[in-house]
Image (cartoon, rainbow, N blue to C red; front, side, top):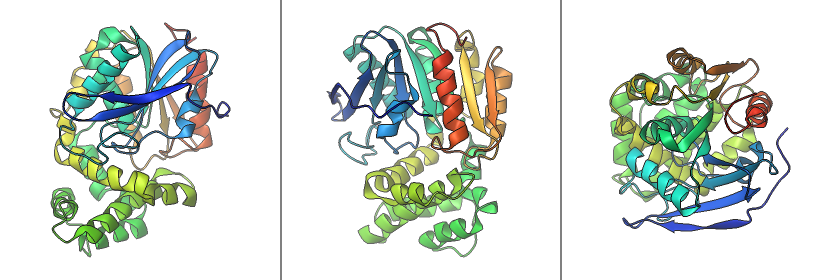
Length: 318
């Protein structure tokens, strides 16, 4: 259901004044509808399949690794790494590529960043395709740290074991313990092990049916070491939002078209957040995929994301 594999025809690093270098790539039709792909995590980075949700004849697709992720440098850096910094990077990349306005496509944390970017730079957005909605609220962070395990108790136990707990002590105590671990207070090897366990826990909870390949990918150094540290960093700082900020500011972008794709059995980002966004956004389209969890790799999610990008004509979803 994805479009065929495609290689970038341009790529590079965008240097920022604070020392970060943002890796970006471009695929598709240079004269097509511009679209920016925002990956999840934060920290997960882009992959070759990230390019394949878009008709390459129709779209000019810009993808990038967010600060500290993927090929961006320095890898895993938390310094000068906030939501506002990421919004600044998106704008700098838009200007660098000579784009006036674009469609914003993102899933999971990518949906969070998409909404935050849109609310800060609404005049630069022509629409949204979002998946697996995460609004950055304390309740959602609490659920990730102290809720997913109700469905995946074996994976949660490994997550707790890595932090030295037999039972879940509550989301804040667990965040505090992982802060010590990721600061290397128990040694670098312990921190690396904990990062792999954190990432594997999320991957295990991502899909409706087990996907050992996804878990293996998430445990690898290229994802795990950035994903765990950056997710933890953003969770500790509540994604650098005021509580409820993204819903409170929906009016800034509610004039724009949006398709929300949500797995019915999404344990990582439960559908309640997607429904809240849909109810706050008049004219939004909510598509519930009844045979899917959270991952963008699940067939039903792929089908609806590709269907949404195929329907967009540059102004509306036909």
